Image (tube, rainbow, N blue to C red; front, side, top):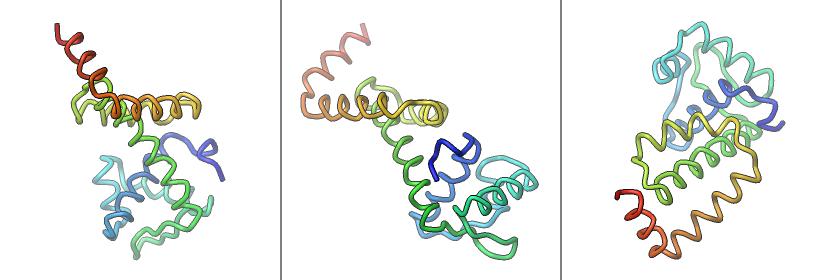
Amino acid sequence: MSTKTLTSGLEDYLEEIYIAHLNDTPLKGAELARKLNISRASVSEALSRLVKKNLITYNSYESIALTPDGIKEAKKVYDKHYTIKDFFETVLDITPKEAGENACKIEHIISQNILDKMTLFTEFCQKNKEITEKFKKEITK
């Protein structure tokens, strides 16, 4: 299974389930619907698709659980989001809210090549803070 076979919507579900998993917080379909501001029927349909892809286990009476494959795929989506958000905040000095909102949109379409280069450049900027500070002064003129 590769995240390439997941729609952006399914990636969003998987990421939200993964966050609950990381926080060791039980998550049911109704709560997921509230978090994503989506109808319960849409959530049920998406969860059914994730079950068929063997990424989660779920029934309407229990909490949603990631399978081992689900954890791997969800981690990829989550890491992609974090990498983009970190780049926006660290390198471009974007507010966390705006960085998070845009990372959520971009994470579904970005190539691995660009993501890898963003990671390297973010690391470079973190090691060479004078460059980042100079850039921040330029963009606030």
